[in-house]
Amino acid sequence: MQTFYWKLQKSSDNQKTNTRAAQLIQQGEVVAFPTETVYGLGADGLNPTAVAKIFAAKGRPNDNPLILHIARQEDILPLTTGLNANARKLMEKFWPGPLTLIVGKAAIVPDAVSAGLPTVAVRFPSNKLAQDFIKACGCPIAAPSANISGRPSPTNAQDVLEDMRGKVAAVLDGGSCGIGLESTVVDTTSPIPTICRPGGVTYEMLTEALGAIEIDPALQGDKNFKPKAPGMKYRHYAPQEPVYLLEGEAVILLHQLTSQALAAGLKVGVLCGAELAQKIPSHERLLLSCWGDSLERLAGDLFYLLRDFDRTRPDVILAAGVSEEGLGLAIMNRLRKAAGYQIVTLENGALHLKNDKHLPEFMIQ
Image (tube, rainbow, N blue to C red; front, side, top):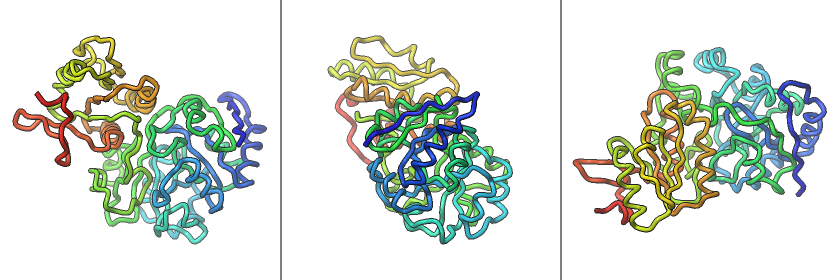
């Protein structure tokens, strides 16, 4: 398949390009487009045949629901059986923006979008390029992130092309995404609204808006459930190489574990903040990716840094955890899934690997 590549202009009219892209959508094709979070892989959300092409392009399990993207707040109304007070509060406070709402599904929404659930996830992105594209299409756009399933989500068009060239009809290049993490997903149909995926709208912001919010226990890594939102069940955001995430007090051992891995002859990737990076000894087999001390900077760069390890190909990746306050909750969610929940902690002076797995040999001294 030929994949068209079209550059969008942020300061001028993109009507001609959007018309061409919308024609592809109306023909049942898939088009990748930018949002403020990550790039989306879009198709007509009311056309089951078109939606199936998203799953095929990504290699995505069909029990993993999609998000419908809309261009006006009122466009949610035909897609749902009704909006309760909590949903309306969140729409008023955070739309347009990086917040997805799970609501009761109307009959016009195909089961392919909702993975057979009686609910549907809907988002109104704040990115104007995304809004203009969706308006031109004239339908809600079903869109997961525009990457091969399991890989880090793309935050620029070149990473989309790396995964999707020849698999989709077109890629719209709107530059780098601002937030860099997928939207927060909140189930508004539960008695107390529940965070199913943390993102740019933080737990603290949601608590301030609603007074009470819960975090879905499935975010801790239990795979024995039917996911209500994208990205809940499967290993995701992952480089090809094994990732070990250091949490809590184990983070202080990052430089020691890096040295041990290098001594074992491994090519080592390290993902950490600038302060920790200063303690890591330089070495020809060390691939150091670091961010500033800002969580906003880390959120924006995280997927790019993870993808970069696929280009440099270390034998193992050590990632330093961060505080779960604010954006940290979303960042840690992505890092845990990138690591496949291979989480290293320090308990009573000894290293432990979550879920009773065995520590790799280089960590055992």
